[in-house]
Amino acid sequence: MHSFLKVILCTALLASGCLATSSHKKTCTDYEIPVTPTSVNLVWGKKFEANFDVVDFVSNINSRTAATSFNPYDLTAPPALTTASYTISATFCTPKKGATGTVLLLSHGLNFDRSYWDPEVSKEKYSFVDWAIARGYSVFYYDRLGVGKSTLVSGYANQASIQIAILEQLATSIRAGKYTGAFGTPKSLVLIGHSFGSVLSSALVTVVPSIAEGLVLTGFSFNGTNGAGFLEAFQPRIASGESSKWKPLDTGYLTPTDIYSNVNVFFKAPDYDVGIAKYAHRNRQPFGINEATSGGLVDLAPLNFTGPAMVIAGQFDLIFCTGQCDEVIEHPAKEIFSQAKAFKAVSYAGAGHGLNFALNATGAFELITEFLSTNGL
Image 1 (cartoon, rainbow, N blue to C red):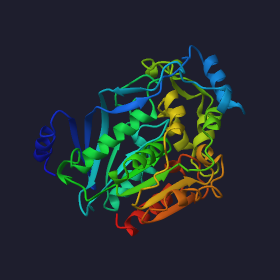
Image 2 (image 1 turned 90 degrees about the vertical axis):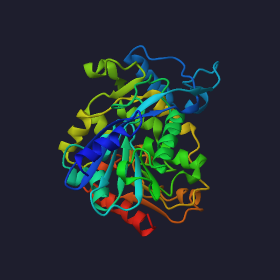
Image 3 (image 1 turned 135 degrees about the vertical axis):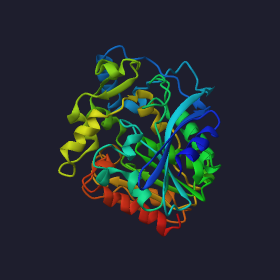
């Protein structure tokens, strides 16, 4: 695209910030997108004053009796219907040649920002964006609320219900041809998530099945989820005390205590390179504690979704399969997606939870794009 045309397109995009860039294979545009989600939000109870409180929280939530003896929310305050305005930082990329009519809307998980889909190192090994672009797909990926360049909010307020509503607004805008530049209106939209991003994607098509023509849930399963174990393995600490760059965050934002706890959750030996593990740890993003707890409180069963649906997790995914996905990935997912045009479940050999950073991540990418193309997307 001619640089002058890029400027004209960016200027025409109302109040949204816009920065267009180009490579020999793709044209990408960055956006700052205003959203105004309405959601029913839970009210957090006791806030952390120190890491001793975090340790006690992890201990309580991992108790055998936690389901009946522990609740982190304020039981005196009912869930509140809330509307608020935020800015979401996002990127849209499209192939310079051979673009299909399909847009992939990518939602990252906890501990990452949108660069999870397009890391700055070894792109030929780990960039799902570049993989998809090379196969004709256009991609829209964004920093979730409270992460990266998107609006910062309290880690006690940030939760799944808000982010599902934001994802719905983003998906609706993309379907209408907004934030896609010269690409225009897509023929089809596929929601792809990783981990918490899969929670958001699955929850959205549960309440609005027609929002997308396809669904891919990575780093996810409907069986064997080990959310409390994730926190225990992660050994979280209050992020603002771990690095000066996180000083603006309140005590509701947490981060792993060191690279080894990070690896414990997201990687599995020998299926990773130490260099990419170090990169992931250097570039990690704190997560809101209410994000971690609220994800399991939303309806994640899109029983009425009729498009192609895929669930794929690393074989040794600690969070969603308690370390072994082989026997739990297919069911009850197959039954949940009984109305889907096509369904596929994959326990991806050797990989851990951070699927995009496995040694053979491109093998997982290939399974995803093959599934989509085979089913007309």
